[in-house]
Image (cartoon, rainbow, N blue to C red; front, side, top):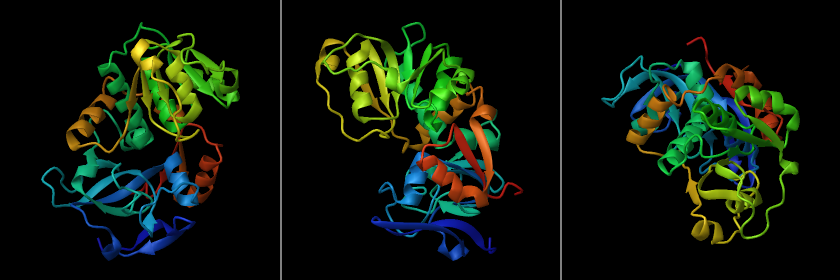
Length: 331
């Protein structure tokens, strides 16, 4: 535990951010019950915003980026974990208010750690990552609120992103008719390979500005927020369910109460900062009935040295699916 820690550190302030590779000592790790030697991490849109300063994501400076990672437990004060356990770390303050996954080692609270369940490899788990966990949690909550195969089409927007790609995969394998909406229509073959029955260019969606429009969707997974989410509230079927998972198109939501009181539309917020029991429930489902079928197609694995370019690609919208960073894959 005394060897140096290679890390991608975000420094500065909310108004001026810079990120660079550096070396930390074990004494610079944050407090926690569990030390994990990291093998792989992923690059989420939130990570790209944090590292470039395009979003006010980081809550303390300096901070190692990376909101999810997989690795092996090296030391533990928690009875839940033993040295050698294969684990995934994500959510809560990981990579935001406490050093995250872009480092060869991390120390975190035990409640931020989950065992990788049987049926998933470490690479499977990080390809799923916090993005896939969020997608699975969205499906879990939507089904608890009445969504079921056969009730109608389910829309997934921002479809080539990490959360949306895995949401399409999960929904399709459960028998839903999935309509993928994207600003990248050239990626239609990729989206259909994941299970989308139809791919629609975002620019081709009809404007939805009246309090109620023609009902089209039994459900929707929305990663955009803003006007696209408002339009979904107006075009969702009676008793339909919308899961809100992101704000790529804006934080404001301007709509009316009409979809909620006349059609019973249910708008559910999805937040991945969950307690251990819910985290374990969702991860068990991800290894069983919610297991995505196309993780190999979704994942692109890049070396640690490529992280700055990957972050630039993600924040500028040039990525598809999930990019996994091999932090120390030989460990």
